[in-house]
Image 1: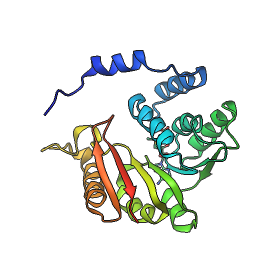
Image 2: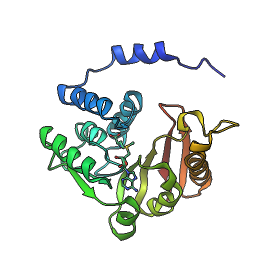
Image 3: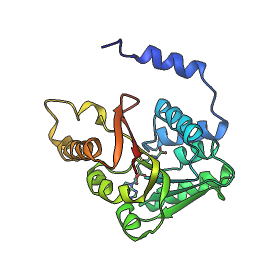
Image 4: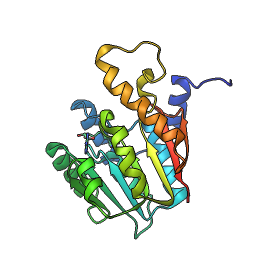
Length: 214
Ligand SMILES: C[S@@+](CC[C@H](N)C(=O)[O-])C[C@H]1O[C@@H](n2cnc3c(N)ncnc32)[C@H](O)[C@@H]1O
């Protein structure tokens, strides 16, 4: 196997790539101060590039938090393209809407205040890209619902499939067991389904990339 990038490599990449605007930096600060988990910078660069490559007209994000990824992705989307993003926590929902207004992206980003499983069960909509990033315990159940909501040729991106190293670890702390088992079950579904061409990439905390087959 080739050399694995270390923290110096990551810092080099971040120091030499495009700078984020003031609102994005403010959101990162807010997330740090309030312990809100948001997508890491390298993974978010990967998602931004995927937008430019696949040009989705419709995106569903599952797990909005403060709207950080939605706002970043919206900047790279075609004029008519839009994002639906689902968030179950009312405080997060309100904070996301506040930041989305500050970013002037209200017409592009629609925050849905609902549980993702309920939303996926009731909606008839299908999407060109789905980004899954909510509670890990529900990943397997979401997998079964989400697959039908992805258009043929659509892109399914999933965060945390290496789950801070626990997914591949021989021993897992008791408090991480349920989430780790859920991720392992999800990964098995994700990598073996005939409906997707899927891979787990060692980007950030392990990014799943699946393309919906005909
Ligand atoms: C890791 S954060 C999302 C970060 C966001 N995708 C970003 O990168 O900016 C996970 C979010 O998912 C939300 N969440 C967890 N379970 C959910 C569910 N079943 N339905 C909808 N949202 C959920 C949490 O409240 C939390 O705000």
